[in-house]
Image (cartoon, rainbow, N blue to C red; front, side, top):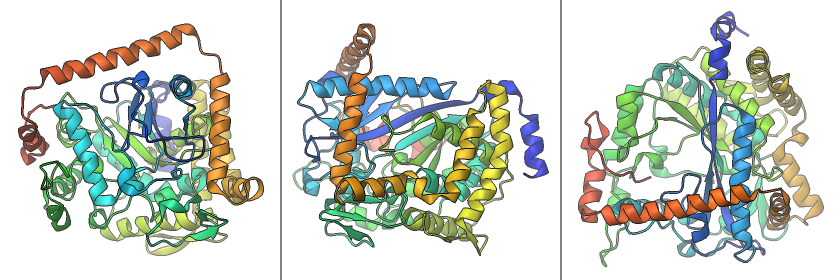
Length: 519
């Protein structure tokens, strides 16, 4: 550990370390017992996806997103995530036994155009959310959007925007370690790659895999596009990041201009024809974030009030964990993010940005391969060797967190588990997934995830769920439906005017225009 890192750690008060906050957003497809995508609408008993604080949909009407609030400790965040799951499973159980698909890579998918896009009602903001998703389907195809993951939102008190961007640069440099340790998507159903070029190997009948893969979701088959590959977004400052994003949000893109905003029948194809329709379309492993005011564009909020927290976006669903992630993993992420914040963080360069993309693809496709070499400053370095360096530097940070939070040795244990995993690739979630597929499920990815999904459903339905909790969730359902109706009744602006105003470049700067948010 460098002296500077030691000094910065020593300067962090216990009060600031106790002020660390985290929250979770977890996506999962709704699947039928036979492992196929459920094509039913978002269940009304789960509330209005537009307005419910904890249960919404992501890209597809069939893709739930379960959201916690902000938590001062790992256990309370997990407890809340578990309660939201319990209520969700109880509702799904009354609707014919749909279950949540516990893998990041999707279940058996129908033809692309049959995958239902999220619907949010007749208000302008609701329609904009659906039109945005229609745009994603034209630009990237619907299959790609059915990949699911966990987003981990994290903050520490008194961190400036400049410091958050330094954290982000280090996170991007070292993200390979999280992909290696926690990637859990080395295989998939062949329906996902039908008609697409890929480098996967066949696995039994109907499944494909990478023998040393960790996270196909974060590799070349995941959230990739030729248009976004043309973006070399720099994270050296809020100003530079904002300028890169503004360019992508306003630059016309010929392939998207060819799609057009509306089709011949007058239905909307997309919100706009620029490289990105809105900020959320930019796919990164981590994002700077700020809570937005009603109707504010996210980039405007960042520019006006600075970074408030970061959103880690590369975590796979762990099919061996009932809610997709466990406390030890979360504690390691907390230590890792603190390491990214406290370490020296040189400015990024176009050469390094290209290196990091290559490292990500190598780790996703071949992370467990013995002796795998990554690039660091133009030179090759072993993944295991580089990972071991980082893990050693995390040990004092874990000890400081344990001391500040009075958590015994829980953070230190999480770092020791990471050290052990670096030396035992067979113990990793990605290796365990492949072993279970091969030994227990006749080389069938769908059979493995079906079994894990059924077991998860059984476990969560068996947990106690107090009548008061049930009543609380039912009240949230009712309130969210009323709130959606209120928003719809208050709308007076024609949708086309709303759309034009929402995508206007003027709303990305420091001006104070306000409108309802399309995300």
